[in-house]
Image (cartoon, rainbow, N blue to C red; front, side):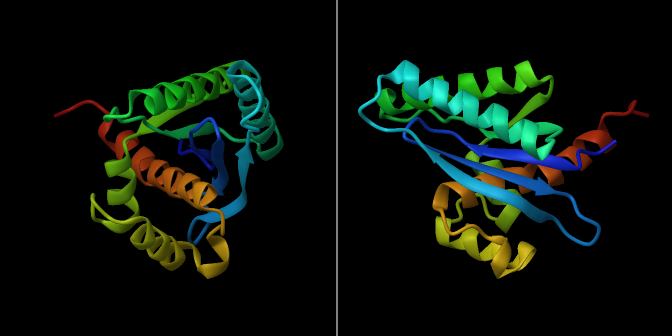
Length: 169
């Protein structure tokens, strides 16, 4: 009924945070986390191909049941936003090719789920992750830690969505 292994993803073209997080019996646990970096001298298509391959590999090796993806928010830097949108697209394609779903979460949702505060700083998110997972469970790489936060958000939200999906009375 509830996803047991979630692949959290913090998308980007230069670097992508990935984290396999399991629901666990007493508390969530990070099974694996990494940051995938793409060389800046590669053309965009080759960088996106590497991201696709890394996500497909992570899904297969970690037996993820769903991908939790941080949703892109459009800001003033449209060039950067377009690059992240492209990366998000290949991440979604990798999940679709693996036969699993994708759930997107806005940065505010992720921060609320992890810290209880929608405008939490990265440092506050890291501290909250340490409280939930223990210090050893928080990856040292910032992008991987962000991916853990996205996965934790999904673990929390998927329960609420499942409970509210039934017929209204």
